[in-house]
Image (cartoon, rainbow, N blue to C red; front, side, top):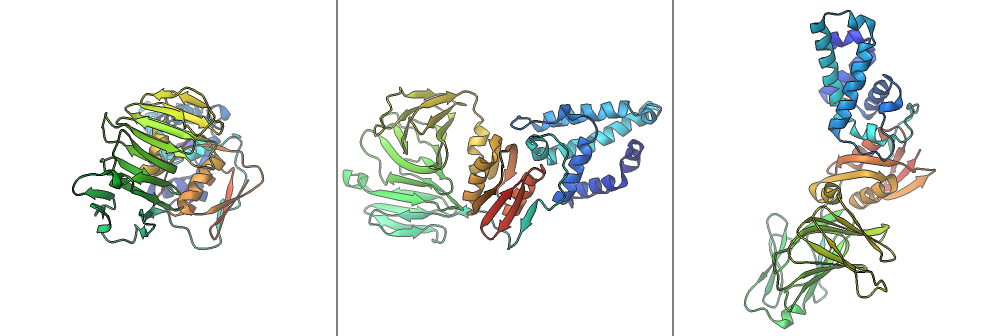
Length: 403
């Protein structure tokens, strides 16, 4: 394959880089050089501007068109027999399509479209690397006692009246109720809190499953009685609500209230974000400003695929065709963004890796793409730095970001 590609006058150094990529040994600097080589084929018409959304298939199609244009303009290639020309084109396309998938962040993140000239290391680490977060949380019982869930043994970890708190083998926390439910039981509230770098899953007494993201909490009764099931959250949580039409399920998050019967939805209500986002995947929910606010706006009814965005003033707007994959990527083990600004991205990364971020200079950049959350923090920054537009320095648990 590589001998055929030599007809295109691919530099020997680039061939070596491609070989490293295919062998899985390419470094971040290798990928930057491959990106430069890719952009040298033609003018900037196929570059993606900041904030443009694109799929990997669209990237592959653009690379294919661009490459074939270059081959057609090469007189030495045109003189070759058709069968050989076809083999050359197919071989080159295979490699570049593979590069397009691996370099998704490169092509979708470069806001200026100019050639990359920087050669200083894009990611500098002065201390040992930082490991990702994991299943970490603290359960606070009604009597104020606290149980560190990540270090607790499986089995019964607490008892409140006739209600046992169980830690299951899969790490899930569940409530086991023996005997009759009483109003006294309904007055018992527990709270689960995740730290920065921690997330957790719980099953409430009614069978509702809740995934808590990092730096979040949920306060809930150990037994649901009466005419509603109500919980209060901070941070971010994903719900799969058990159906019970006679007892609506309500979630209060800061100044937002979400009412459901049985559905799957995500609520992002971090204090340091500009708005509270409720994304519906299944069923129906009613979103409104809570009673303790001065906002008189009518409630909004969401259908699957819609997102309610409520600003600090309590004004709610509904977005159609929301990217539900972006909303729930966190619970599936990914960071995923669609035209997101760098500071928004780094707030999420900082929560997961429990780091602080310091900015130096203008870093008004936007990115689209997806990255796994299970690697060291330097791996995440290496991907972001492939754009050549931003540099990261990891100094202990402090991340310094600069252009």
